[in-house]
Length: 268
Image (cartoon, rainbow, N blue to C red; front, side):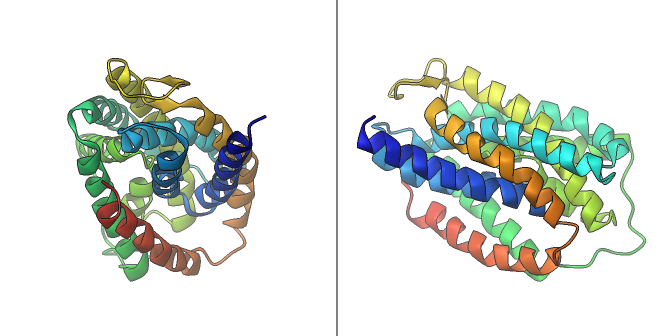
C-alpha cells in the first residue's frame, strides 16, 4: 500500500471520528468541519481545480450516513420530534436538491466565500446564545415549508447538513435544545440525500476531476470519514444528555470562526 494513501486515509479517519462526535453532540451535521478539512487535504492528495465542489459533495454524502446513526441514537432516547420533521421535510428536500444542482454554476472561490460567511454567522449565533421571545411558536405548514426550503438550499450548497441551520431555527421558536438537536439530526437525512443527488448530477459533465469520483463525490474520502464517524456519532448523541451543551457550543463557536477565516481568506 503506497505511503501517501495511508497518510490520506488516516486524515479522513481522524476527521470522521471527530465529526461523528460533534454531529451527535451538537446537532451540526459535521460539514462545518469536513468541508474546510477536505478542501485543505485534497489540495495535497489530488490534482484538481475543483476541490471545493468535491469537498462539499463528499461532505453531504458522509453526512447522510452519519445522520442515520445519530438520528437513530436520538430516537432511542425519545428526543426526536417527528411531527416537526414532517413539517420541514418537503421544503428541505426541494431546497437541498436545488442547492446541490445549482452548484455547477458557481466558481469554487464563490462557494468557498459563501461557506465562510455562513459558518461565521453560525459561530456568532453559538457565541451570542440569543434568547428567543418566550411567546414565539413555530409557524404553520407554509411557513415551515419556506423555512425548510431555505435551510435545505443553503445547507446543500455548502455541504453542511440541515442540522446546522435547523437547530437554531427550532430553538429560536422555543423548541428545547435537546429536542432541537435530536430533530435536526433527523432533518439532516433528507438534506444530505437530496443534496448528494444534486451534486452527483451537477458533476457528471464536469472536467478536471480525479479518479474514484461519481459526479463531485470523492469515494476515498467518503469511505474514510464514514468508517470512523458511524461509530462515534452515537457516542456524541449519548453525551448530549450528560454534558453542558451550551458551554460546548460556545467553545465550538470559536473553533468555527477559525475555520470560517480559512475558507474566506485562504482558499482560492
